[in-house]
Length: 173
Image (cartoon, rainbow, N blue to C red):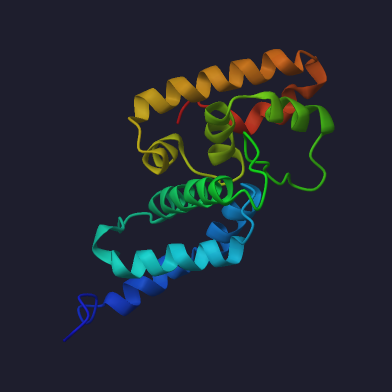
C-alpha cells in the first residue's frame, strides 16, 4: 500500500515545510514546552501525514497552530497527571536582553493578548498569517492586536519604552 504523500513532489514539498523546523522549535521553547524539540518533531510528523492540508504559500501559520494545539494538550496532560504543577498561564522564555519593564508588562497581559503580540514580534508573522495561526478572522485579529498593543502601552506608561513597541505596529499591514 502506498503512502498518500508519495509521488507528485510530496518529498520536495515536505522539505520546504521541514525547513521551518527551527522556527517551530523556537516557538515551542518560547511558549514553555517541556520538550520543545520533541514537540516540533511531532508537528513535522503531523505535517507529513496531513501534507495536503498544509498551505503551500506559507506553512508557518499552519505549523504554529499545530504546535499551539500540541502545547495545550501537553499542559492538559501535565495537569491531569499532577506529576508537574501546571501553571495557570504558560511561562514563555524571553529573548535575551529583553527590557525588564517590557517583559513584566508582557507577563501581566492575558494569554490572548500576549499571543497576539508575540506572533507578530517573535514569530515575525504578518497579522493575516497570525490570524490563520490562531484560526480567527484577520479583521478580528487586527482588532485584538490593536487592543493588546494599547494595553501593553498603558502598562508601560513611560515614554522611553515606546521604542520597544515600534515593530508591533499594525498600520499598513
